[in-house]
Image 1 (cartoon, rainbow, N blue to C red):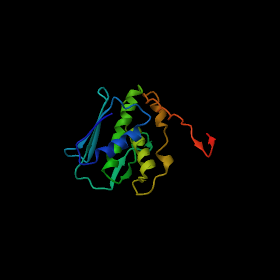
Image 2 (image 1 turned 90 degrees about the vertical axis):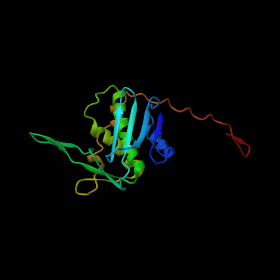
Image 3 (image 1 turned 180 degrees about the vertical axis):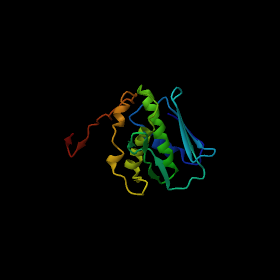
Image 4 (image 1 turned 60 degrees about the vertical axis):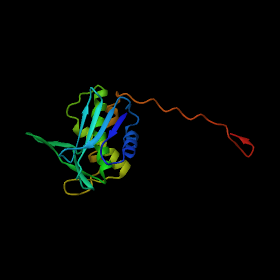
Length: 186
């Protein structure tokens, strides 16, 4: 991954976080650029053909940041459909950048898996939210402020959907070194 960061956030910390949560998917062709946005609180873009991801963060965002997500199940009646917005509370700009990165990464993985790229926003949000909830304990709340049960939003096998996306080669296991302890050879 070619990574650049023009914000005041620590590039090394952000890069390590992105890499950690990209495994096991191949990211060797990706170019990721983090920068400040001109006016919005945040945004992201994925360019499939060039394998580029742009992450734009607002300079004046206040944290903790309540991020509206589309992870809830859709509902419908005879005339239309809708989806409740669940809010994911992010502690800092690093978590917001990671969420946007993972959201755009999933768009990229969908494309690399040979799937249709249209109308995948909820899946991308679920992919990113899963990491923020599991790795950082970020709370996910409904429109009334209540905690959201996991099975109401985490109901798809997102990794199976992008199973056709290239993966990195498994890391070679460290060579076993013979060790002698108190005269016993292991």
